[in-house]
Image (cartoon, rainbow, N blue to C red; front, side, top):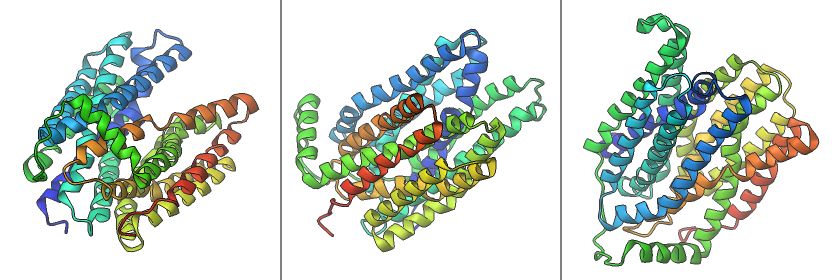
Length: 410
């Protein structure tokens, strides 16, 4: 199966763009923003503006994702739009290099643009899964993409950590200069490893008649169609809730570890562990999903996350944090990959980008309830352990809704 160049090219885009998710979003950008670009602001001010930037980027994608999905299908330009948004992300990321101390407003604007480019390109990347794989192989292909993404993200993050600790390897004397160069390397990595998708991956379109309705009317009709189907509606609501729990753990793990007093070095090592465990685990999860069904694989992953939440509540040492990093790596990519392939089976012919526009809209609006829940519980109880335990609600409700979803092939 993996000898198919369309599939290999498609999966390598996950290797390409995960460098942004890992090195920029999860790794270096928050640290450099607070300590360098926004060094003139107080800790609370820099945290506020970084949070506002992330929220702004997510809100923009939530608004535009259904529209750009319809445009991609309507005019049969999914790969072209993926390329456009990828280039927006790449150029904006490379421009981080020009920011000096105190240029936080400029850098934050570039970060929002880069993040919008990254997330918008994923609308079309996800939609291509329908085009390149058959129903029989879709779980394995989706798992392969996430697996390569974890490996690529882990290798790139490890390299950037090395360069930041030994800037002389880049011929530099100061760590911050090495980190700024790493942002350019991230942009180059993202661009270069996108080329196999552009040259190898074939995008197939249905032979349906061209829809001459305007985009606004099509968007309204799309929402009515998607959410009028009971099974699609149930899955999307279930996905929105349980992926909120998954994303909250991704986004809040470092903050939670810091609240418990763990060292920054331990937290970065845990992030690397998750990436490298996630590589083989996501691929294996694709095979498991193929054998037991994507829905059953997702349900198992949600149950595993409930266990992780309980163990996080009882965590005592850095070794416990490492163990949790391994457990998260075992299921994080699998749940994401199987959710994508399960939803892909619900997509009508010729509407892949439209449907994945809504899928990504919900995915990007996730991680809203969870962080608010964690923050609120921590504030009320003054106990961070109770805050992570509260995420059990999201996994329980998400699993209950997912259990009621049935595909026509079931």
